[in-house]
Figure 1 (cartoon, rainbow, N blue to C red):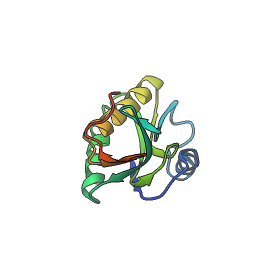
Figure 2: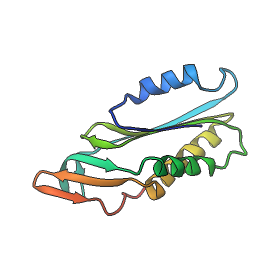
Figure 3: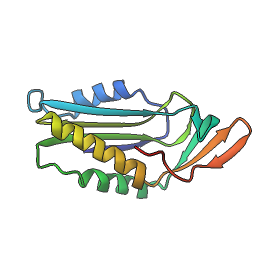
Figure 4: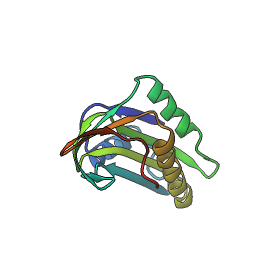
Amino acid sequence: MHIEVCEHAFSPWERLATFESEHGPRQGSFGATATFVGTMRDFNEGDDVVSLTLEHYPGMTERQLERIVSGVDDRDGLLEVLVLHRVGQVVPGDPIVLVAVWSAHRAAAFAACRQIMEALKSSAPFWKKEELKDGQRWVAQNTPG
């Protein structure tokens, strides 16, 4: 399991390739890799969004992300998990989150990837402030999955 809170922009596909070559499961030991990349939209609740600032409490956030990943049902051969999540200011089109799961079988990989992502959206301690064209606001809730 590798979890990282990133203060700077990242390329999800470069980070995925690097992780696979340096820390991922041995080639041939897995049959499926499921990935999810979440990017920032330029709209929310009917308004144009210029940027988004994600805040967190260092240490607490990483521990909660570890609990989320540890809570995944891995009885179907889950081998490795990578979670990267941005903090700081992001702009539309920027990747915010990468979740990658390696498993013996595709059903387990898909299920674990979705379970982690849904838990991130509902229980990870991130606070979001949107910069709109005509003001700013704190995001009260996440969009439904």
